[in-house]
Length: 296
Image 1 (cartoon, rainbow, N blue to C red):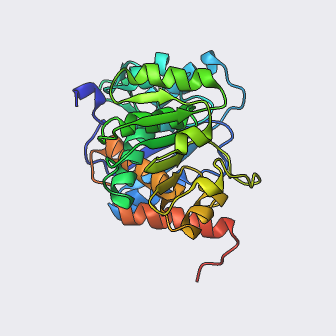
Image 2: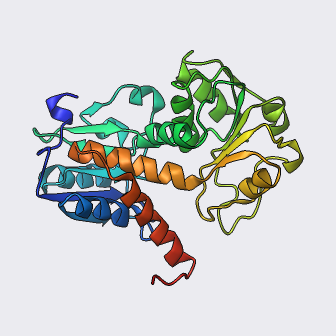
């Protein structure tokens, strides 16, 4: 890591972080990062920075504020993950090809460096929950922002073949081109073709996110030998994961991606190892509150 990419102080006593996006009022990020900071003895404030419909000039102004007001860094979410890329001073390895940033670190010289912890977090989560994914083809449903991050994560996991389906074929083609031979990736014409003989299935779309109750794949195509991952976490147990569990598949919920991307971002902001258990419990608390479960 270069000096420009390092946080202003590797072990700060106080920590100012934030999230740029819209809408973000219900984000779990503040509670996760503030809980992690508190566990490590840091006075942490996580500021939501929201301006609906902001154009490039507004986004640049928000980043200038982050640069000058003492932020260690910010997370970036919809709709700015791609728009923020050309406004940064530097990008970590592979981000130019990936084309999206969800974490910006303010360096000691106030330079802004972009990272993508959706990608690193997904890879880390998959290793923790599923383990070895090199045993056969993987079907990726959705090649949007999250799907692209997943594709780049899989490129470092010895996946023998990645089959990508998106309703907008151009997005799938763009992801294959961006991967640039990092792994054997092909565009398929249907979900059925993606799943035929696949060892793993990943939903990288919003299908199944409340209030939607759909399933991105035909349930009959799920086999007990498959592993199935979903990026959706509201609800945690999506129609896809419920069906996969019923059929004996190994499953990974969207919780793991959310927790591990936050852990990776916290490490980038502070230089400290993130307390995974604390961040996970903070996420679970938010989910229980949304479900109306009272804390005892």
